Image (cartoon, rainbow, N blue to C red; front, side, top):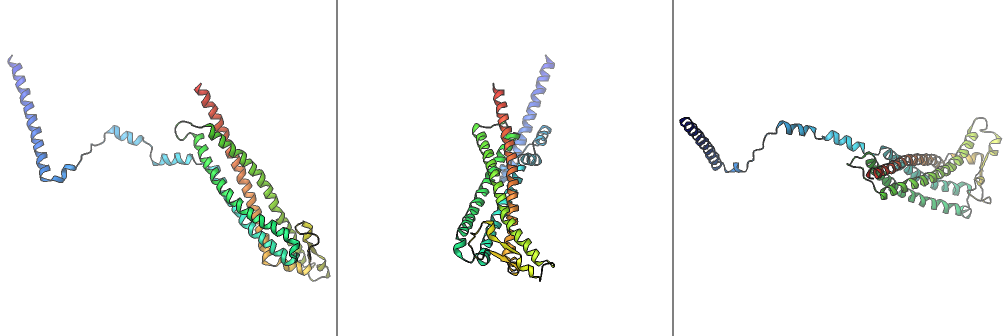
Length: 305
């Protein structure tokens, strides 16, 4: 019985000593707070353990987030949008100025009577207004296609958790595919139409180069080299004078209106070609995304059942 009583007494003494130590520590802390009142609001943060450090290292950092965001960029649609904006801007801007220069050349040299080219002037003015509408429409349509490309790319690559798509989203994607195909065919016609003034101005320029050549320059046969603008159908056959020959035709080729309009029509034709290429890229991107969305939606339905 004595050893048991001694061990119990020793335990009681140890507990009393621990209480004294704790009370002494609490008294020191209270004294410190009394001397420095601002220290009461101080909060001591625990040191992170090894497990906490491992969890911080395993969490995705800035580099991984950037890679994930770059993976959702529709690069094909982005390139097509830049190419489409550039092509439409070149076609609309250069075509508008070139049409105004063409009217000035016709009025000054090939059709002095205003009534002869009144219909042509109205058509050119209408085409200039159409150019304004084309520029506005394709600016908006390019932004919509780029946004649709972001949506479909994120859905196809499943960047945001589970794959989620709706029938409405697939219907909108299919509508953009059909509309892009229609616009691509229409712009093929615009591209071919924009090559007509380039061909006309090239024929006039090549005729002037023949007049300037040493073989024909200064000879009597120079005045027999002519260009009849009425054969292109842009002015009626009764327009006067309708044709230019020799030195008068050479003077037309040396004017700034002719030089500027010729090169602007070339740039406008190149812009139309760039727009056709952009629409072809849009066709491939939207068709691929729509096909993958439709396939994954069917696969998702099959897994549910």
